[in-house]
Amino acid sequence: MQVLIVEDEVRLAEALGQILSEQKYLVDIVHDGEDGYDYAASGIYDVIVLDVMLPGMDGYEIVRKLRRNKNQTPVIMLTARSATDDKVKGLDCGADDYMTKPFEPEELLARIRALTRRQGEVVLDEMTFGDLTLDLSTCDLKCAGKSIHLNFKEFEILKLLMGAQGSVITKEDIIVKVWGYDSDASDNNVEAYISFLRKKFAFLKTKASIIALRKVGYRLMEEQDQR
Image (cartoon, rainbow, N blue to C red; front, side, top):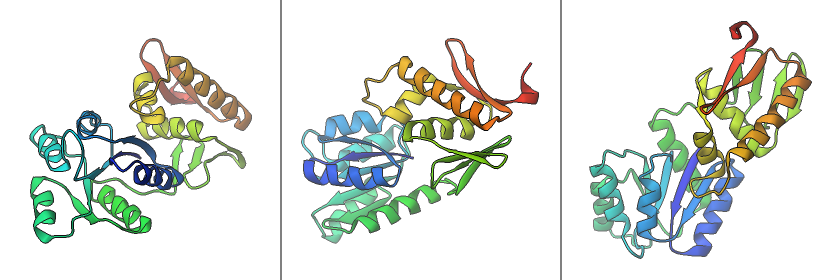
């Protein structure tokens, strides 16, 4: 899951980013309103954690603009203000939830989980494709009694491919979702990690394989599907 944090208190933003990263969320952080809106408008995030008081454009205006442009990404607003009128204003602008600083990290994580469930995300312990099983809690890939551990980026790329269930995932989508919106990663990075995954597939002797479609992207296929 990919989360955007828009918060001008740098230490708080970095602390939140660390907490979310430890939960295996992909996190982008920006510190002003205009950048926050540009990132949020990309539509690649599952949840946006948004401070109210920001330089350039405040959180209320960001949410208004997102909703006017039909962007329905769930938004949790953060503020030092506790007045009921401020909370009402945030929710009326289109925010989905509202938290007053200071707050406990566990509460933020719980609210993120609740919002993603509400948006239809199914919380699973594992994913499968053909004879492969990916354990989402341990990052272990299993096949016919054998198991191998994946590093973080291998895990995130394979999770995308398995979630697509045979549909094509472009290199651009992989870069954005695995390295982040503002990353300087290139096609070469994707190709390197695809190569690492293929070696692990060979170790497991799986019937599944990662197929490259030239100038398009990658897809998972089972042995019987390959012609």
